[in-house]
Image (tube, rainbow, N blue to C red; front, side, top):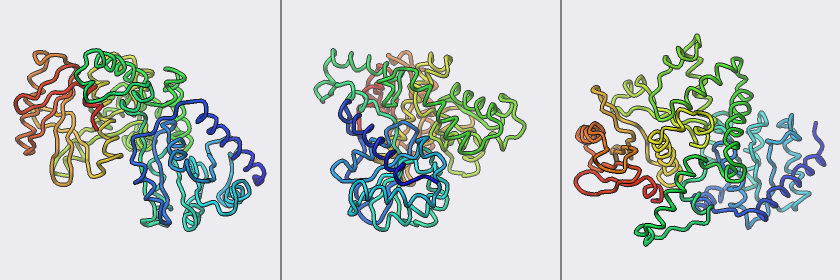
Amino acid sequence: MIATDEIKRVAVSQREEIEDIFERERIIDREVDEPSLMRYIRFPNILAVLGARRCGKSMLSWLLFKDKRFGYLNFDDERLHGIEARELDKVLQSSYELYGGDIEYIILDEIQNVPGWELFANRLRRTKKVIITGSNSNLLSGELSTHLTGRYMDFTLFPFSFREFLDLSGVSFSKSDFYSTKKISRVRLLLEDYMKLGGFPEAYKFGARLPVKIYEDIINKDVIQRYGIRYKKALKDISRYLISNSAGEITYSKIKSVCSIRDVHTVRNYVSYLESAYLFFILERFSYKLKQQVIAPKKVYAIDTGIIGSMSFKMSSNTGKLMENIVAVELLRRKSYWHNRWEIYYWKDHLHHEVDFLVKEGQRVKQLIQVTYVSRKEEMEKREITSLFRASKELRCKDLLVITWDYESSDGQIKFIPLWKWLLQR
């Protein structure tokens, strides 16, 4: 049992820690639509902010409630280890005693660390405006979804985009700057830094060792501990394999043979756990036939190129693959923040012509995207262009885009755009 006074001590120290960060450091506004997120909790709803560990969920929650009086407790704290669901009422009591009995707003950070927390959150949302955060996409798939039934809204937060990274670096970019050779040169250099360090906010404070620490915490805390993994080495081998094959095709049977695992179902489960912890994203191959879509190889992308660079020497030297990984995460970020109806796939036909990304909205294929590390059109492989035209004809999509390193053109049927410029677009 944990005493109310101990919960208050933890709550006060956690609040002081975050308030100190706001005072000492430059906190940038995230690109999310804050008014829309606040509308989700205007009624007796819960807003669930989900995303990878250390991507900024706590700070976003504070920014949303910055003009409010609110209670806050982060359950990813060893001092609260072992707290049980029946003791969660003490959290509410502590908030009343610390901040007043009329407090309306509550943030429950990393609440998934308390087994059986769902009923408490469901009761709390009837009288309070509640934000919960979690580092697992399955946070809402259990009892909470049963009890709430339309009384929650979930939102996935990603690490910093390149636009947010520039903001943090103190670099503004106006329309006129697109014609400034000096400004473009600086932005290109910053893009190289962004590819190396990635988008986790603290990486810019602590350097390249921070993504390694985040990776280890996700593996150990969000996967091994959460799911009670027995074969820890097998899980870690699969994760390393996925990192080294980021932006590539994978099959569960290939992973089984490479990692010397007996059962393909174990592989499938372990990959799903890693995906649920937001360490990887799996894209399916597009097909109008659901069966073909399910059985086809998948493509895997890591949440952050900083983790790729820290964990995989092979991948960190492959700029084209890193570019593709950045584009994949940016597409998923735009889907989460602004375009909820998007679906993201890759495309490949029986002759192995491949298109890196297919963006679908409703019943319509909206855009086809290739990513290639070239600075001149002459460097581009003919197969990449042929694949775009084949997909365009088959899918009846005329919006064809090639994202390059440093080549731009809008002549003809295909638009070419440098990666830095595409990342600066909304």
